[in-house]
Every structure is written in structure tokens, then in C-alpha cells.
Image (cartoon, rainbow, N blue to C red; front, top):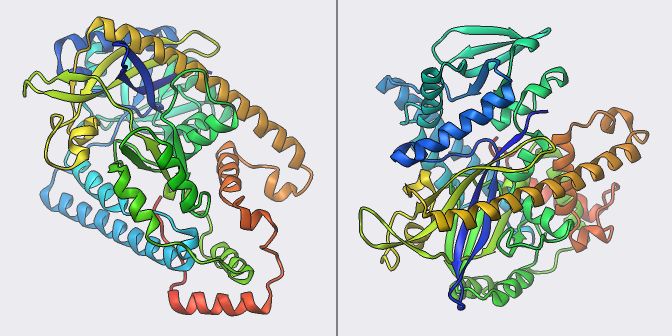
Length: 489
């Protein structure tokens, strides 16, 4: 297996002692992005990245997945945007329906759907991936065979790559050095080609879920470093409002970060005032839920939500980690900063840091607008990338290496647990369990965590529905008046 690429988010937090301490914020997999191409010093990063890819490819051709050419025709783009908005409208309706079924006892948050729609509509206007283009141009200048492709097909012992220039290039296993795919492509890679691809599909799935990352940290012991901000998962009855309020009260920060379970590129990330949030949570207290209602919910969901993955609808509340103040080269003012550090982790090797850069929030500290504008430093949401002071870079790089090692250890522990689970269940029901993919097992583990709230764990949901539960089902379906739920994907 080839190695893995990580994009880590790390802050340097000021300390009363006068020193600055690194604190991990997030780990991102092979779909990470940077803006190194926007300043002269950043080009060194692409040199190091290309050297790593060339070494792993052993001099053979390198294939890098990129987005298809965007729709350039104004009418076609307008139609695509209309279809995109219609899908998000359906997703909002589906979430409304689900919330109506579940009620306040199993409440979940989905206001982020609007933010996600705005993000993707904006992405439709982008014409190219400048990072992948920079890498391809650098490879061409150095005489390295590197191809950008938009999709691929497997045919016997070969892979057919559909290149971004419209041509198709087929290559047998022996003539492919390395493939850098999108994470979604990893799940369909046949075993005989797996050794050619960067990334690990199970690890990518874990990093895609903010909720699962917190589960992993808690389940396999918190690392002895500032790995992730202290946080709590909320939604679908996993955590009660009282437990959430208790967590918030214990947080030393006056600000709280709320993220949607499947957040990327800052979508659905909110910076909230802790005091106001606690007041809102205390306004209402869910009424106790009956056994019959629990049975009815279980039945209705099992009939309407086949193949729906709910982890994206979990919320993660995290302590806000303060940052040292970095002067913006254009505004001349101090901005909140978060580092993006790229690390390559060879298979059974030592982490190699390829580069770090500061990302400065769009607005300066003290800006009298939304907190997200001055405290959310995501490149896709208007943040500015600038070079990093060597002293800061040394601290950040050391911490990034530790974070990747900790994640690798946790992922290996999870893999052993998954393998044990497979062994224990393979004879129970060969049809349903014997051929589970790693992806479905990861979702199964998460769903196990979701459905192990106290009420369900106490055995209140049974296969045989009581008459009271049957009446509840009729009431739920009559009120909802919809045959199925659409929640995206």
C-alpha cells in the first residue's frame, strides 16, 4: 500500500507563561486543500510534494484525480445551479420530516443545509483546480510523467484513466507508479490495484466524520498531546440537553464552535457565544418518551430510511481554541490564524512534513460582524494564506507529526476491533454480515453508538410491536404524510 497524505489544522495558543502552545483542531485526509500557490515561497511545497510522489511511484507515471471541467455555458450553468438548489430543497424537506417524526427527544440540527447549498453553488463557478494544475505544470517542467484524470475504469489487469484533456490513457498495473484519488474513489478500488493508491478508505471515512473522530479519541484513550479540542457529540438522543449544558459550563472559553458531523471547507461551522447558547438550551426540556413511541420511531425509520447515513446530521460542540494574533499583510491588522500543515505518512514509515502555512480569518479581530468572519479561517470561506515564521513552523511541524502518529495508532486499534467483529459475526448470518465492507462496518459502529442511548439500551425497542406502538405508527405517518426521506448523499 502507498502512504497517506494528511492536511492538519493546528493553532498556536498563547499561554500566560509567555510561550505559545500548539493545539490540534482537525485532521483531514487526501481531499485537503492549500493555497501555497498564491505566494512565491509556497512553491517549495509543491517541489517537496512532487518529490514524494515521484519517489513512491519509483519513476513510473503518476495519476492525480481532479474535478471535471466545469460548465462554461451560461445557460447550462444556470440549469445546473437550479438542479443543485432543488436537491437541497428536498434535503431540507427530508430533514423537516425526520425532525417531525423524532420530536424533541431525539432532536438534531440541520440549519447548516443552507450554508452547504451556498458553498456548492459557489463552487460551480470555479473553472479549475489551481493546486492540481500547479503540480502538473511543475511535473512537466521537470520531465516527470504526471497525468490529471477525472474518472477511471478497471478492465482486467489495467486501469483506463479519462484525462482532463478529453483523452483516455490505459495502463496495466506494472506501468502505473501511483494514483492520488479523491477519497470517494477509494471505496471502489479492486484489491489487486489497492497497492497503487494513496490513502486508506477506512481512515478517510473516519476523518470525514467529526463525530467519529471524537468517538475514536474517547474510545481509544485521549493522546498525551493537544490532539483535538475538547468536544461533545449531540443529536438523535446521544447526549441530553442537560449533558450538553454541563459540558458547556465546564468549558473555560466564552465561545463554542459547533460543527456538523460531515463538515468540510468550513461548511456548517458556527462560532457561538456560550452564555447565549446555554440560555437557549435551557428554554425547553423534552418530555419523557413512552416505550410505544420508541417502538414506533424504530419501525418508521427502518421503513423510510434505508441506506441513509445519519452521521452527517450529528453535531459536534467544541471548546473554542484561541490563536496567537498574526498581522495581515494587506489590512495591516491582527487576525485570528489557523495553520494548515501537509504531512505525508509512508506505509510503516516516519511522518514527513511537506509544508505549513497560516490561514488568516477574512476579517480582523474585533470586527463588528458575525463571529465566523473574524474567527473562522477556512480558505474556501475567504481566509488568506500567508507564509509562516520559521520558529512557528518548527513548533507546528513537530505537533503535526505527533498528531498523525496518534491517529495512525487509533485507526489501527479500530481496525483490529473491526476484524474481531467480523470474525465473531461471520457465522451468524452469512448473507447480511459475511460480506460487509469496511465502509459499512464503520457506519455500523457509529450507528451502534447512536442507538445506544439509555432508553434503547434498556431494551425498550422490541421486534414485536405493541398495540400502542401500532397506533403511534399510524399517528406518525398520518402527520408526516410522506412515503420516504431524502437526506442527501
